[in-house]
Every structure is written in C-alpha cells, then in structure tokens.
Length: 352
Image (cartoon, rainbow, N blue to C red; front, side, top):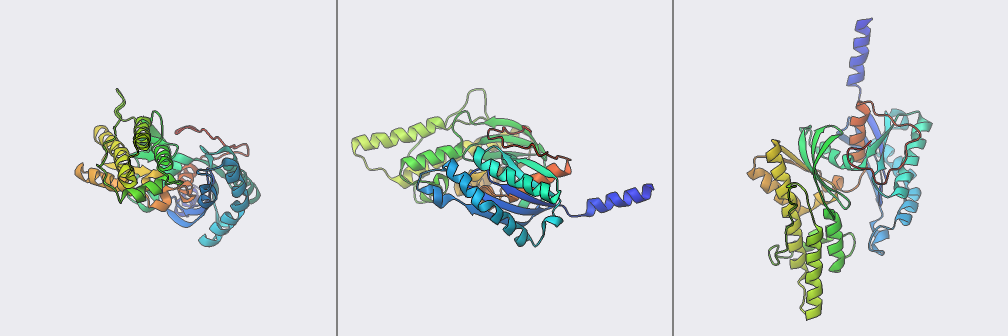
C-alpha cells in the first residue's frame, strides 16, 4: 500500500501543471497559459492605450467596458495559442487586487465563471506579486531569497522576497510612485500619455546632467523614496521658464529628471542588497522596462558583484503570464479561493 501511495505521489510531482491566468487590473485585458510556473505557452494582451490617449490617462468606466468586450476573446486566444483546452488546465489564476475596481471585477467574474463551469480550482493573485514573479519566466536560476525593486505607476517598493509569495517590505515611497512622477512630468512638458515610455524615448536625445534636480532622502529611513519634491522642482522649472519667456529644451529636461529618479532607485536598491547580504537583485513593474534604469542597475550591480535580474519589457508591463507564474506557486502551496472571491482595489503587498 505504501509503495502504491509513493508511486502516485511521484507521478503527481512529475506531472506538468498548467495555469490559465487572467489579468484586467487597469487597461490591459490579458490571458495566458503558463506551465510549471516558468514556461509561458501563450501570452495574449489586448491593450487600451490608443483608447485612453485622447483623455490623457485611463478612464476607469471606459476601461471596464472594454474589458467586458475583450475578455472572452483573449481567454479563447490564449488557450488556442497554447494548444490546450480547459480540460488540460489544472487551475484558473486571476488578479483580484490592487487596481481599478470595475476593471478587476471583470477579470474576477470571468475567472470564477470558468473555474465553476470547468470544475477547476480558483487561485486569486496579488497584482504586484505577479510583477515580481515575472522575473521567474526568463531566469530559470532565480529562486528566493533575493531583493526586488518594484516600480510602477502606483507602487514603488523595495522588498526582500523571502520565499515564493512571501515578502518583507524594507522601503517604499512616502508620496508619489516613480511611474506616477513620470506621467505627471510627461504631461507637464506636453509628451502626453503614456508618460513612462515617452520620457524614456525623449531622454535619449538629451543631456542627463543639463539640469541638477534635487534628490530627496528620508531621514531615518535609508531605503524609502520620495519623488514629490523632484516632481515639484521640475514643474517650478517649467513655470519659471514660461514666466521669463525662456525656451525649454525638453529632451534635456526629461533626461535630467529621469536621471534623478534612476539614481534614487538604483542607489537604494543596491545599498539594500549589500547591507542585507544578498547577491541577487531583481526589478519589477512597468517602470522596470525603462532603458536608463536597466542600464544603470546593471552597471551598479556589476560593480557590487551582485547578480541582476529583470524581465523582458513585455513582461514588465501588465500581462497575464506573470499572474500565471504567481498563481502556480500559490497553487502548489495549497491556496484555493471560493466563489466569494472579490475585487480588492486597495490590496496591500503581503495581504491575503
């Protein structure tokens, strides 16, 4: 009897685990099939950027309606691209927070409906934990523990990833998130939406040392960030130029601004890795696709003999593959959600 049980357990361990994942926290409707938490079989993203550009940012009601329109299509496409059926899938993973409440509800409702109809387990995923998990897709050697810098439009956190799905927050922004500062500065100089990619592109044409903007430090909290003062300094520079009739060199301005943000992010992340004794440092979130940040982080990590990990840009911005990765490790830990799973728009990192 014991031998039979052992054989069954071994066969279970050897069997591939497929997760169908759904992401709809903001303005991307996405679905993906992920095998064993690391291999992406499909990654379908329906972006709404063109739709929201005319408004200068995401309009929640429009985003929710577009999710409803697209979600069945992306799920069907994800299964087809992966060459699997619902019967082959082991569990349904879905982002349930944080994000826009209406947008989240569309994804959660879809995931619950599929899980109920197909009699599959339902696994809710924290959106930011998904971003961290994006690093596992292309880095088979990356395993916890390691330090991770999470930078997006809504979040700037410095965390120790102690285990899969287990985080210790050691630093955070006291005001604006890095991505939020990028968007506000982009809007102020007329680059428009989405701010991050447009600042990154324009900054390549400018001098990062043309204007020395302030770098804020939070007294008593060496790993915390503050970008509100930097953003105000940029806006004051623009206002002064307008009042005096001085012409603004936009590439120089955004390059100098970006340099100040990157310097703050890199210095704290590398300091944390050194002081906490970790030789692995990863970045995650939408701003992690910024070319200046990636280059500066690589250079700093090389000097400090720290291994630097980062997802490809397609896995930095919102996608369902990262949700599938995070869902896999939650599923393996035994996490299961009931039909009462709901959207939690203000879900904090580490909360369940």
